[in-house]
Image (tube, rainbow, N blue to C red; front, side):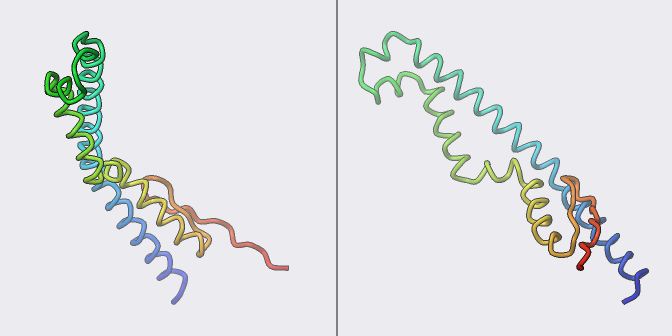
Length: 125
């Protein structure tokens, strides 16, 4: 394989990698917005739950029953974490990190957008 073919292969790989990471960005943005929204809902519900004077006087489950907004948002947040939202909000960086690991063997790397970074070859003496 001559150097022209190698350069074309690298360009094709870089185009595909940047395309794939760019394709993940809208989905990642939506998952981040969902996570922020449900986190704010949980924090607001927790605040209302904690400042309610009745919370200290009744049992734990009764206090949760009296604050359905907090209970539902907390259950939803826990469910989202079990469903893997913590991986979905950082999916492009996971892909880039794994590519960096593989590309390191070939004296290359990539940035968070998928652009290839060619490193100089180490000199053997």
